[in-house]
Image: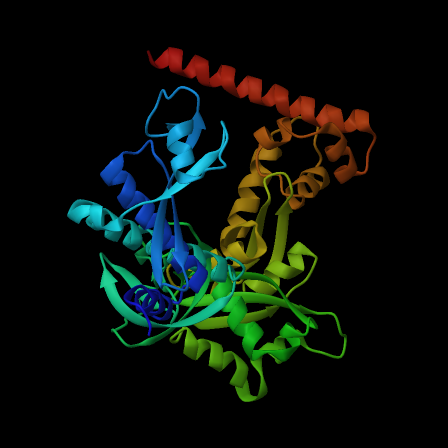
Length: 424
């Protein structure tokens, strides 16, 4: 006949999916807590589940001493030999306790300990099950909403999709299936430990990995990814096999593969572009569908200036700047875009400024402007060796250009100071 305790252990095991040995440990520790609540926290009490009786037995341990200083932890040799005729000084003797004396308060303590320990065990099991799944896709069922957060049932655990990780254009109802990216696994105490995301770029990358065998096999690699969740995304792809077109592999026959990803992301537009190690070539691909006329790179500030036709400017920038923002995120460079006409105006202003430097020929001015210098101040701050390389002259001549620019800056400052003094 199965005892009530055995039925309780089996029920907890099945309902909470906690291994039987852990359930037994929880009940044993609860009984120890209850006994200490009744008899005092200093006592040395242990619990043991008796498989034969189907019940927990409590034992109080005390040490045999010549002189007793603490009756809760010690007993005399005569008292000890009443329990064990062969005991000696220093032996630790265990005496079975009467569970019936614990009382209502101790029983309540035991119940609270069981509840808390079960929660702790569930959290630990959840953490151990999901700790290696960070960065993966996971599917669950929407269960409820808490302060804007979505609680997702993962069958054996609950996950949270925080408001900040939700796509504003997506809505869910209880019972809906949801696929999300595992953002983090925590040891949280009062909330689900599995943190999900629908906005992370990793979601997009994992979805393509599911749909494109070449990515899963390592032939095609997603080199970079940028998203404005719910609206538009860009991915840059490369291939380790010259016979495999990375863009075509991701698009699929008649767009089947990319459309499967778009469907899962509920209509988010996706641009697939070829990756290139040359930053200038890469940004030209990234800014598509706009056509780029020229690219100027400033390694120092990690900035690119793109020049596009006047009719291409709107395409390059995109709606509310979306296209250029995504291109910048994708390439990792700051990107400024100018139309041909605006660029021509800037070049003319730069020529006018730099032409004021003493001793520069028209050809020298043009060479400096073509190299990206747009003001006298930029030349004054430039490295003499860089100027010499641009102009194809000796280092001394490069230094002379920088010095001339510096003198002009000084003269302009003095002129401005005189004008300010005269106006006063």
